Picture 1 (cartoon, rainbow, N blue to C red):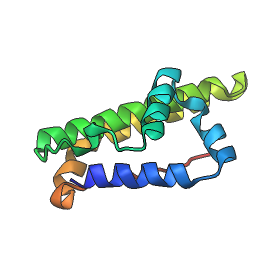
Picture 2: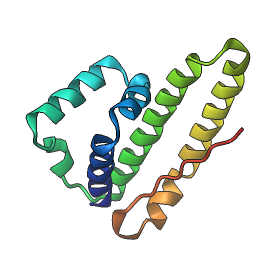
Picture 3: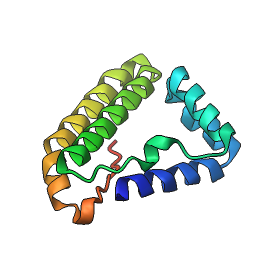
Picture 4: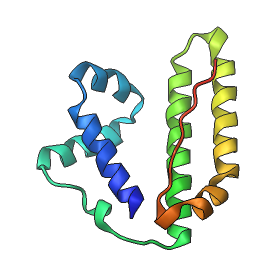
Length: 125
């Protein structure tokens, strides 16, 4: 399943990034998730959840929606750290991105060849 492979590749890329980058980019990760990630990395093995195959459309859609929700939560945490005068615009941007991604989730899963779902990150100012 392409999602599993992409997750593994993304995880490997994160591990190979510099410590300074990891410290700044992990600031928005909840402490419980960070602790779990740290224990998985320390064990030296891949988490078992990466190898649970379910190629059904429903599973792909659920995985994509979970990713979209996680991205929304991370964006909200990042917005909370912004100055007060920029926070409302940041939250509105995050909400618009979430709604656009959720509205297109079905089409993205339908269009994905062989179950591969691609996520696009856009940055607006």
